[in-house]
Length: 144
Image (cartoon, rainbow, N blue to C red; front, side):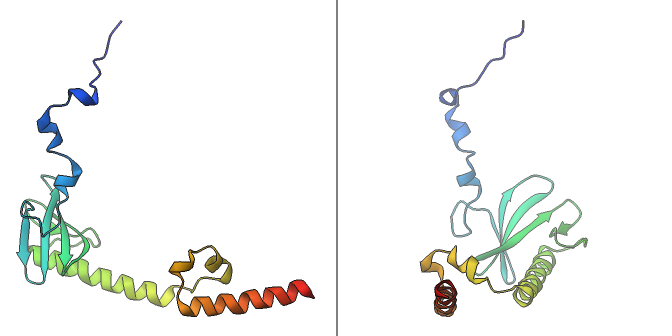
């Protein structure tokens, strides 16, 4: 009969705690973060060896992830191989812009029933007005 040695959480070496995700995914402002500055963007190393994964920041916002291979860079949103990280970051940024515009033009406003399921604090003034009219119509229907 074979026995497996189980490792309890209390038997971990202190060095194992240094590899926590909180320390790996540092913000670009952290002095311990591995940051590459490229024109218009900051690349922050996240993990990996080949490819190395970098979170891409534009200003204070993360826009996505790009990958550094031995021979090229990629952004995961297209099938292109980029020679420079800035090209992969720009390709990612352009894709995200198109995605936002596409989503904004095709997205339908929520129905009144969906608005009723949202938290009151999250509703805009226009959504409140729609709900007021909807509830007033519903009361008239019930009364009739």
